[in-house]
Length: 424
Image (tube, rainbow, N blue to C red; front, side):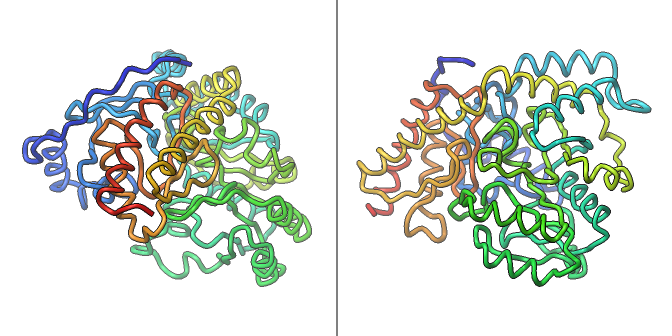
């Protein structure tokens, strides 16, 4: 992993009407509904944030106007090792020269399946898809096929994808899409027990994020009592405990995010980081669910693409070899400590929550995220890309030198908050 970091070139704003980014936005609005769909829509971010990017390298991004940023969103998670990681890209390019989407899978399919089962502690088998929504949906299909039941328990506010059964925006969906979902409160054992009782003998699965990472609120690590209760209740009910590792996978623990708690799921959904930006997702499961997984029908013309699988093989190998989780923990701790010291010195109340590998910074007395917008806009102007209310991500390419440079930008951001909103 690199040890030095050049300072990003100044992210100087240019006249909006003359930027390449604005020109692309105008063109996109003519041919794409709203100009951009879903979470990638920069309209939800402070003014000055780019919508379109030219390239990425390591932990750096360049927008279409040539502005350079130290990136703490990591493509919303897929960038695990660093953009354009040489070993990952070499593996992907070697496979591309042979073929990607063919009449059937390449040998990488079996090789990657073996590597996944060897990597994730609970996994006895794996099924591949292309994105996180695919994986969470397939996991629930397996749970329902195995149990012959319908009800699935999900926590209030948890995001598990963009299919009709789970999308956070109801437009285009029907009430019937969610008929068999029952909600409970994350980290609340009594609430979970009540939901299990409500499902009764129709409980197929409990679907949980390994940490609570809902938009715009403090992240929560699971309490041991809650994780143990989830495992116990599923076992007692003959239901599947499903972990949605789409955001957390490989960042918190190489073998699975709940391994430190001594809790293993029956099924896990993976995506984002497992191929370092190449489109790949997976469902892993235990032997008890192998037959059910073989009975469902789920498929995609691109799901066995060899290029992403070659990238996935390289990603798993590099993450294991380089001790990725420990590196992210160390780098994340430096960032969290630096931010805490800066905020304390300026008398500004901030809250940093969740694992340091997935930082979230929220401000006290900031219900509309106005302070957060001020902070992030100023940091962006100083060459650091942050998010005001979504958990961020660290990658293997972030170094101590990058953190030092980033903290210069966050200090400017905190000073802007104090000047505009006052202390407190």
